[in-house]
Image 1 (tube, one colour):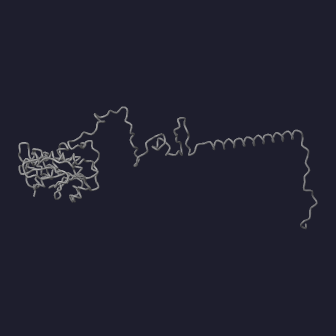
Image 2 (cartoon, rainbow, N blue to C red):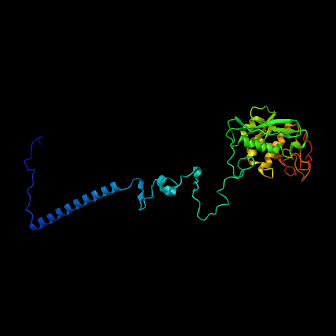
Image 3 (cartoon, rainbow, N blue to C red):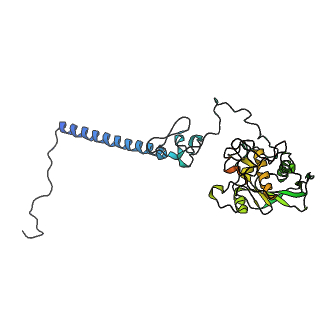
Length: 321
């Protein structure tokens, strides 16, 4: 058949009239369809409202206002995570939490735990309660301004104390402590050849007692022996260099108060200023000489800070080559 020509048949169909029963069934189907559409629309609206009101990050909120983390909860806001939520302390590096500053109600305070540190004769806190010793300082020193009377019967050697700034040691208090050591009857003035005097400001001195941080001490003493780095004292020229760590903490080799170990430092290094050389232990159970390097070990001797005993006997030991 040529294109564009009709067959002559009609494109519409004639409809057969419905019976009353069929019309009722069709009306019921239309009602059910309308109810289904309306129910679906209501469900969609309720779902959208619930989504808009839901908390972010999956964290549900409980009555007291703290976050109760569920799956997917943000750990930064959970008290159990050590984060900022709930007032918990932040987690320390390494995964360990910082201890709470509040003491336990069942703990017992140590006797005098709130008392201030006990003062030593130098006017500084005793090492048991002192703050940690600074390892290094600026390398600048402040001098004592106190002065004293001559001590001993021999020619007077004048001296003063200089303390590295930032060390926490008062120069005048340290000067009085050194003066008490040099003037003790067990000290070098027991020998009538020696005398000392704490010099005042502007007066010339024969030697200086420098209290320095461990790093500065190592520099002044030119310490190169690994086991002595940061630990030792020395005499450098006419400077008696006292390691701040040893002044504040004593020595693990020395059994006695830190004030006694300070006496050992001063007597040993001033002994070098006077021309004495190192000595060693004279025998088990005997007092270690003041000129012994007791920080290296006692070799069977007992710790001792003084060159003489109270009867005036010099506590000597074999000379160290």
